[in-house]
Length: 427
Image (cartoon, rainbow, N blue to C red; front, side):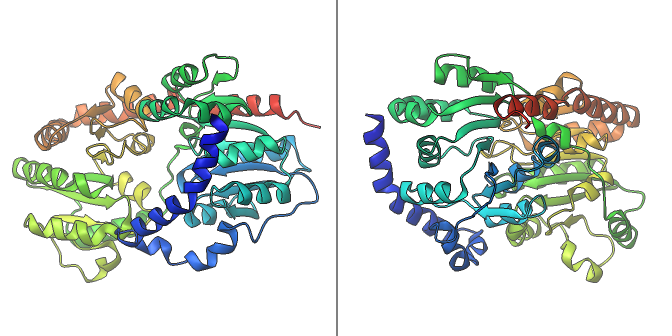
């Protein structure tokens, strides 16, 4: 039955790919398709990698998953210096990030069995290490048929995904049959994988390797300070909303209006998760009667704006460092949250909404130590921010607690490396 479902999936694969294409064509992120024609040779496995030695193959979905490999890859090179390291990604932005870590970075072919078989046969990997959740049926099946051991590192699985896998259990059994180890990033993920696999012999709890990477080093503080001085914000309190999504931005703006009414000297920096949606954010800000220059046009901004709208990647560490209270987005909509521990690295109190399924462990650790606070509405977001800004001692104490929560979560990289080398001992 599992094999029949795999055949059906392969028959549907071209139509699924076409639906994704149409979705992106009509979404605000359509610019991601600009290089589509140039990518087709890799997407269709026309261009395939070749190595003289069998490589260690890491697969990561996109930028975030690739960045999580930054510490573990140098350690793998120490253990296996003669082995090339290959990284595949599902997105072109992920591949660009992967090229910072290795010269062997490729786009993963479309999940169609003949393409996956051709890619794996050409690369001849020794071991496939999949980061987090990128579990494609043909990728796993083709790797198994080729005799490639597969390990999932920093593994996570949501209750919803678990339900989907159990609904199609014959296909799931076929997919997971060739996985030799699953290194889960949290106790909840471990328990859900246990329910899926019906046994714990392949499972181990290593923690989240992303926690070991949360050590923000602001690089552009001078530019931020220049704006703060030019805008007349030098003595103002700054509320920051980072990695926001369109569906939650009106709530955040309503909260800021209430904060500003209670504390007129408060200003806001808002940084959408996807800078290409900044024009929509700017429209929402104007509709609330607020003034917010774009970061990219800050040189032409008038003094005294209410907000700053950041429309560039790579600025979060800088703006967090100058903020007093930070709200992390993707938590008031259905996204599931972004890294709530990043502001904690800079000893900032962290606020977030109730949808923390992708950052559950970090959010819980922050709440346990009173360094992070869950808010569900615009009023709750405003009230908590106001209470912190009005009490400097409580503000400082919450920031110290947030950083302590982060430090307590570190150590997953060493545990993950130990599990990897148990599957692939050094030679």
